Length: 245
Image (cartoon, rainbow, N blue to C red; front, side, top):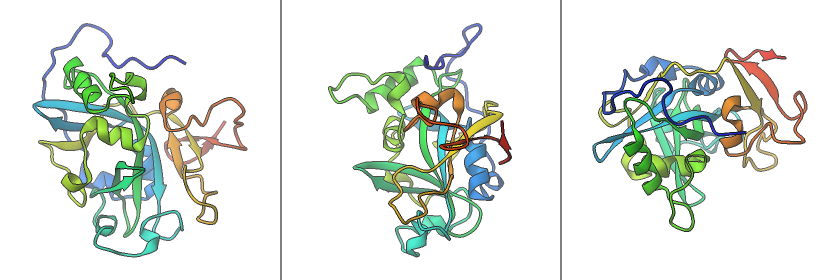
């Protein structure tokens, strides 16, 4: 499967325009699974060094206070305080040597992990922004990472957007520097499957991971890869949580 284009279609548009409005706080103050579904297709905007760096959200995971896979289930600590704040609070932590991005959801201890994204190039974030993201997140040999893999994982996403735990953990969104925008790209149908990296015995069976099928090949692990079967390994779902054919 070829990577969806990172460039806008149609006539070339002027770069450097201001981004659109941020999602309101009320958008995040909802059930984590609903929020995880509805964040797919939204665009993260991050202003750095005078450029707007942008990534479309293509993979999310929902977490609840009451299930064993969540950080919040381990109890309240100062480090985990963002999980117990109002919906839309940024919660960041270190995962596998890198930074990881989450947003608190409705209800204390509930949150959504932004598992992976895809570079988003438009009138706000032009080719210069994409090049800056590649400079922030080179491959193992120091060369520019291919756009399709630039944000293909929670730590790669944060690195490409220049998001770091000390700067953003337990903060609210800032329209001048970091927020989420509705770019009108929400998928009508999505893939629902089990979360990744959940240890045995910690509710690893829960299907709280959601993937935009148009970008499934570029997420952390493709749920539609060869050998996977609908109904057994994943479900097709609409944005409202109903299983569809």
